[in-house]
Image 1 (cartoon, rainbow, N blue to C red):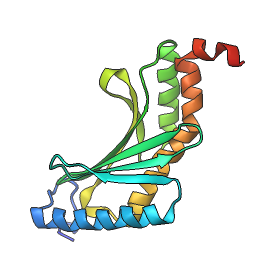
Image 2 (image 1 turned 90 degrees about the horizontal axis):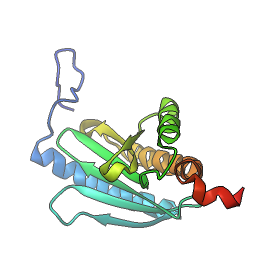
Image 3 (image 1 turned 120 degrees about the vertical axis):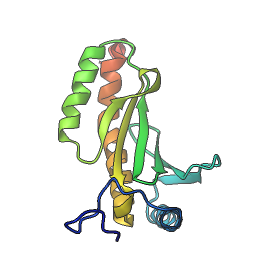
Image 4 (image 1 turned 90 degrees about the vertical axis):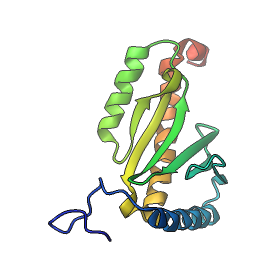
Length: 166
């Protein structure tokens, strides 16, 4: 590990060089392949073809049919995110309060509002410390969080569509 500070700890601000990124890219390729072989609910893994260091891991769910996690490797961070649901049609304040309260209990990820006010689950990790166990934890956390929250979020944000189900 590179020494990024005077006390011997890695600084998250240190950028990985091209060689270090290439090594980590190959490792992530291997790790997601191994996780694909381990878990039946992973149905596809794809790579970006636009020059970015990006993986798409698609998982079959029960509450939400599919959850796709995007892993994007940068010089400083591995960013990860998944689309949870479109912008709410109603009860916005209640939904956003619900998301903020869920954020309080989450570790390593947070709900956020993205393009077109859609709801996402996101996080990041220093590139310099990424291991297979981190990829496993990231995929598991995002998958489990979406599975646990999805139905209740839809019932809040699209309440009138579920009024007859009650």
